[in-house]
Length: 157
Image (cartoon, rainbow, N blue to C red; front, side, top):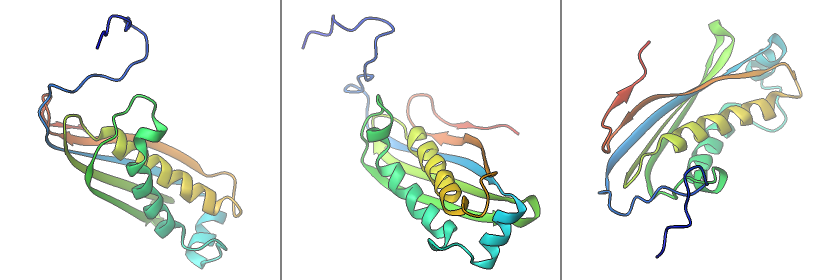
């Protein structure tokens, strides 16, 4: 295959053909800052669509599996594990979402973990928007990644 048509700056998928498949993991998080009205609706069960936290958890898992369909240059990966945790942090007035994704592949799963968190946060917003439009999604960020040539990385706080 002639790859000479690829020029610097032109979109293309990175060729990972020669990279070994290794165990790779990534963990990301996101927050949904709640208003008093949204918090009351969440705690009072006054959300007609169902349990926002449970639905967000499922949405995050589904999103991780569809990341290559959403992010144009991501490789489709055989995910071996996706764990999404969604919890109300009442004292901080927010919902915290954390996703950990695992694979044995030639490239990492950072984008899958970030996508899981972002879509889970959007789902919380969607389910609580009837109570308040003032919700804020914040701090969608990578916490940890391991595996591959670059090894381990952890967010320093």
